[in-house]
Amino acid sequence: MGNIRHYLQFKDFSREEYEYVFGRAKWIKDKYKRYEPYHPLFDRTLVMIFEKASTRTRLSFEAGMQQLGGSAIYLNTRDSQLGRGEPVEDAGQVISRMSDLVMIRTFEQDIVERFAANSRVPVINGLTNEYHPCQILADIFTFIEHRGSIQGKTVAWVGDSNNMCNTWLQAAELLDFHVHVSTPPGYEVEPERAGLYGTDHFKQFADPLEACKGAHLVTTDVWTSMGFEAENDERMKAFADWCVDAEMMAVAAPDAVFMHCLPAHRGEEVTAEVIDGPQSVVWDEAENRLHAQKALMEYLVLGQIEY
Ligand code: CP
Ligand code: NVA
Image (cartoon, rainbow, N blue to C red; front, side):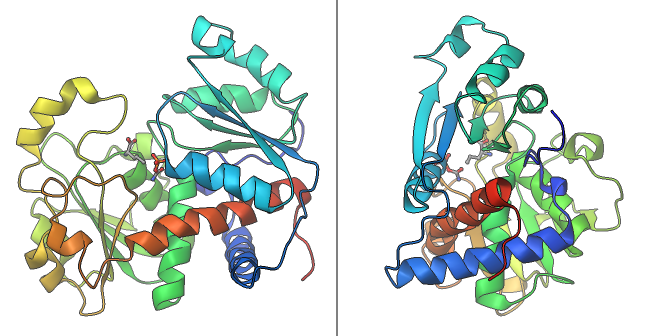
């Protein structure tokens, strides 16, 4: 509807908007760490719709909205009419008349797109089969905190070409860095599904060790994403050699960091030695969901503010 801004995939924002949001995330985080109240969204309501499980996304949006002075309402498929076949267009019309902001975690990207097309308020993608933009927002904010600008750097993605991988690829085109992807045969990136407009920011590697060579950030995710559980046995076999281990970290840049959106499965996509080791920044990464999304919500509701 109209000119409302939504955040449905990473490329929905420009590079300038990301610069603003990352700056605000730092400002909001610093203030929070000093225990200074900040309530720019006083009296505003966020509705969170979950059609898949979550710990971090629910917690960071709910706590974040409360910390900004507003309130958050949790809806899931089980306890609402969404699970009983109410059209997503109708849900968009109704829910957006009673709230200031909506976050949705669901299956196909098409669902958030259709909801947003019928919404009077901004809609945020809290994870779909195709994308997870809020996570990459937090991941890049975390990289900047630890290592400075990501422009020109190389990210190694080892594992499944899933929603996280697709979003990294979009971010690379927008923020001008490189992604080296290694997946098992048959699980390669599908550029159209990833929403890419060029291919010069990403390269596919058959060997995960090759993908990690010289990388400034090594990252991975579960072998079986939510919604794909029926493929689990097949995937366990196919992905066995795509476990991020010390050997992969050793060929990356000496100051490379390791990230994982979590939840993680030690011994599958990553060894305990790596995820619990000195190069891992996964706890900062998880915490930064809170700060980055507070900046995102503030921007979507209030636009750019002078500070
Ligand atoms: N990383 C992430 O989105 O975690 P949850 O599934 O717990 O929300
Ligand atoms: N790729 C994973 C991410 C979980 C946060 C999934 O979609 O299940």
